[in-house]
Every structure is written in C-alpha cells, then in structure tokens.
Image 1 (tube, one colour):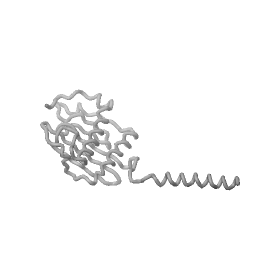
Image 2 (image 1 turned 60 degrees about the vertical axis):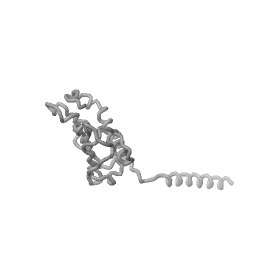
Image 3 (image 1 turned 30 degrees about the vertical axis):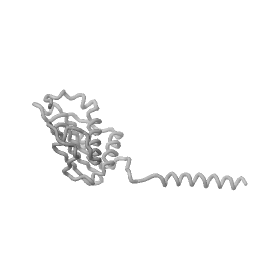
Image 4 (image 1 turned 30 degrees about the horizontal axis):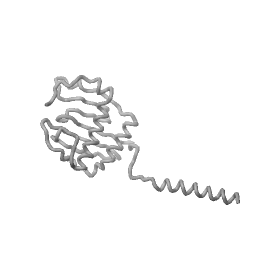
Length: 172
C-alpha cells in the first residue's frame, strides 16, 4: 500500500510539472538576444536621440553648441531586457519603414525614428512630422507611440539626462 501511495504521489507531481510546462509559451521572448541594440530619435522635430550601441544620449541638436547637450549612458541589463520586451511586443516587422501612426498633425511636429538590431537584422520605423502627442486612435499606431514614449521616458529619467543643460530653445 505504501509503495502504491508513493507511486501515486510521484505520478501526480510529474503530471503537475508537465502541465505547468505545457502552459508556457516560447512565443514571447523575455530576454534580449545577444546582438540586440536599438536607436531612438524623438521629441519636437526629432531633436533628441539615443543609441544603445554607443550609449550616446542627445538632449537636443538645436542649440548654439550641440555638443553641450550630449552625454553617454549605458543601459542596465534590466533596462535592456525591459526595452527588448517592449519592442518585441510591437512585432516590428509588421510596420513599414515609413509609418504614420495616425495621430494627426501639430505645429511644431514630432519625429520618431526607431531602429532595432537583433538576430543579425536591422529594422527602422520612421514617423516624421507627426503630432507632438503620444496618442492615436489606431491600435497599431498607439502601440508604436506607447513604446517610443516609454523608452524616451526611461532615458529622460536618468541622471545622465538630468546632468545636461536646460533647453536653449523652447518650441510653442
């Protein structure tokens, strides 16, 4: 009887483990690929940018001395994985190279350029002269805008960004 109970509990444990593993999916990768990198250009007229390969973080290119608005920031492994997951959620291959997220127009306008390097490939999505807003009534457009906004928010919350001077020129 003892042996039967032991076999029964062992079988139940094995089925539980197999059942849990069967519920997991490999569709969503949660760790950045070895060669993952990205570059993002954002802000009014696309004056701000970051390149994760070099760590170059630019607050503005529209200044008397643009070099004063450049610093370097390396992503933590946690931030890199988080941003990788954000970008992976987009299915970036489904976006054209020149993209209109259907968020209207504004003056001044915003330019977003997201370039992603992974698994030996490069993909760029360029949304130029769009409304200076991270909202869209289009679901796919909203997903793209939200990812770009979240990445830019992470970058602008760094100590490196805070160390840069205030904007020389403000747009209205």
